[in-house]
Length: 208
Image 1 (spheres, helix red, strand yellow):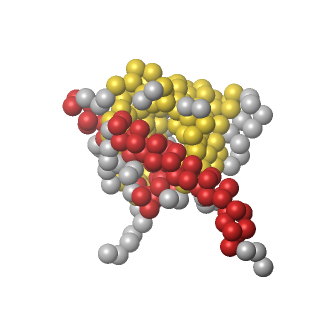
Image 2 (image 1 turned 90 degrees about the vertical axis):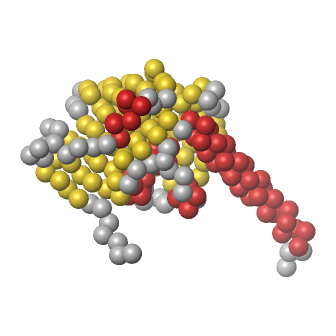
Image 3 (image 1 turned 180 degrees about the vertical axis):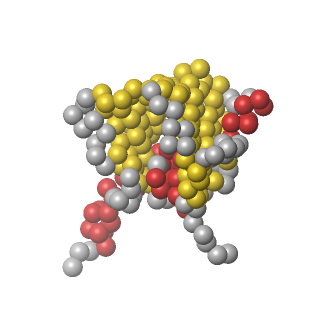
């Protein structure tokens, strides 16, 4: 039987790692608290598991705390994601369809939604580690669709994000023209369903 001091010695490395990860998570949340709102343009590059570029695009990105998010890919094919504070709307103009999710469902699909989410219980589902200027966000659930997200800062300015999926594809988003969301831009977080578009309502029907 190991003596108590031996057990403590064995557990020390785990305690150090755990404390460091907790500090990194707190550091990221502090940066996001200071960010509060952001409007930027982005360029997107998607590479496969072999490093081959399979798609490039560009668009507009915005966020506002709490729980508001805007992602408009304008090329090569248009798509739009809007989180209005309660629901997440995913619009495909080509298919003339919009899907509606609960905010927590969207976070399960992509941890990038953590940028505007402050719920401590949700954050506890992810491991956060700081590497150079990038925070690596990894879901503890191995069945998550996105296996890793990196959020990178230049000082306090969000400059780049990457997402890696289960197939090994990596999407890299470089931000430019960063600035706070203006009053005139706040309407970005309100989605109006276009006429004639099919609605796929996937929100959880929970009973309070």
